[in-house]
Image (cartoon, helix red, strand yellow):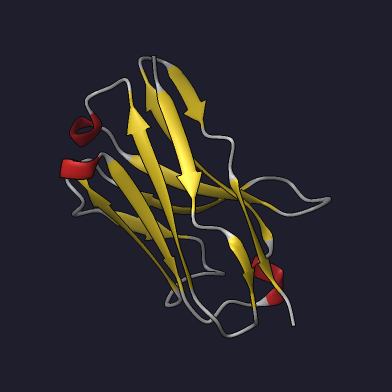
Length: 116
């Protein structure tokens, strides 16, 4: 059974940093690409960052390039999202996902609020 559990969200002042974690289970983690998405209130969900199965390939939404970094630790079955220089417009629920055997699985998400 595929399971994804996010953590690390919280309230941070603009300009601050947070690191999100997503712990995966139920599949061979090192074989699969992983992604982070976010959904702000009243907006559609959007892709934030993606990392390939080997970790060599990454891509980012234009709005977070240079501020966010996605990484993975296959020994811990965990994908991370380091978020620096946070802006109020980064406020959203952040979720990780994996496409596994024809289906997309999602975690429940973690709330990030960038506000003074």
